[in-house]
Image 1 (cartoon, rainbow, N blue to C red):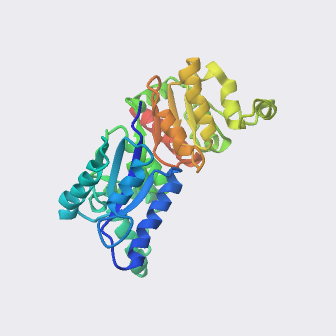
Image 2 (cartoon, one colour):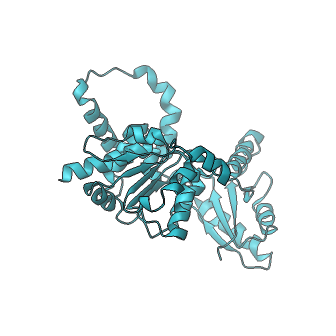
Image 3 (cartoon, rainbow, N blue to C red):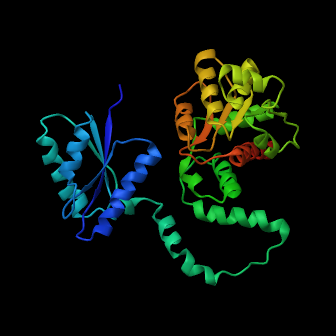
Length: 334
């Protein structure tokens, strides 16, 4: 049985209410994003609630573990000594066992660069200059820029072209940090493509974006006869019903989901309950309702290799980009 966690957002505290207000806002945003009330703000001094108050509020929810996030810049004395001491004394007064996990402060995160460049952006834009590049060299230059930005990133070499293609497609470096590959997902996908596996998609936008010049069949049955009626009768989304209607046809083939979390949830159910075994699942739906949850559900399986990401980002163009990167890798290897 998993631990019941509570999350403490800890700041130093200030006599200036506007500084404290940012911590309240951050906590509210976290509650909204994760759809959970298990977050509490807390201040070391000069503001309320105190760290002790925050711990008591979480303990009242019968938690087993506190995850403390220090809203500090670096690992100074407050991080290494003061805050842990306050937490230890506060828990001791509860006379119950609560595990504490202390996370790194904000300044230790590699995304600090993103924050700094965002804050500087408007000051730098008047220095921009257009660059004359031959049309045939634009993609090469883009990939060169991407490689320069991710050169220090640690990842298996076969995953790098896939991540680069997604970043190239979206212009979003967040995917460098959020993409997840199970086991030998890239190798399994390339092997399936080499065997001319069919690529099934949840929506026609993914289907349209996939490179078909090497003879791979790409199918989407979303708009096939009977799907709309069947979905209504089964009280399912069209995407989920369409995928379920394929049943064993999915075995040994690739499934690319970029739009519908419900389709990904249904597919995982089919893998778990019905023994369906695609060669590879690309599960990267976009959205605010069940998108990130469906991806975490996918990560629970070990019967089938998969490629996914953390969070709500994704989409049809991302799913297509992943498939195209695998097709290119398979084509170049043969």
